[in-house]
Length: 301
Image (cartoon, rainbow, N blue to C red):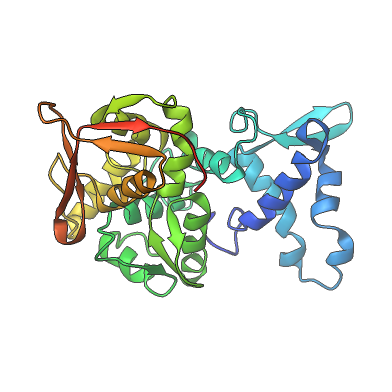
């Protein structure tokens, strides 16, 4: 089942937030399954609810266990739920960062040509939007998402239950920024900002190409990433035009400029350096040339 369909488990990430907050407040970040369910979905709040509503928390719990954000172990006669050490290995890692890493993990995206397989649907749509020209697609809403998808991924066949979920989901994951109540700008700034401290040391300078390699390995939806390349191949058959090899996408260019303005990174161009890349702006304009990127600090954004 698709996790972007609001009738299916995985779509209600607010329920996952409740699980996370309760587990974080518990000793060793673990609780018996029934106690976790009782705290997050007490029966006193479910009186008179339809069966679909009553089953929402249990089905969400099962989905996030299947995807790997949560784990379940048997201790004696008790089933214990805990935060996965694979995705919560670092101290105080944000929930959405752990979830983003889980949802883009290889085992949850074994075949991007399929539908309704683990995290594949969300990965396809997020990657598609990050590949688009953000100036020609100024905002993404539940009203225009279907038009975008039908144009570039006509075999996807998104439905109304899904378009209602995807824009907010992508914003929560750090791939978009909310600009009004119902509209979002394509912008991976937050996702990149959260990964940079795990990719570079404070004060470390890399060539722009090495920085991009580390970025697309951490977030394979970005330029040059394994998922990005697969989606670009598909959408190029339906009118999407690739940029030249020394150009960064408008979404990544936007994010890097915002990160520089916030003091998190600095970028420069050395006249005699090879491997330069250009940031892309409105109407395909070259905003600036970059040869090196330095990580300054995670900062406050």
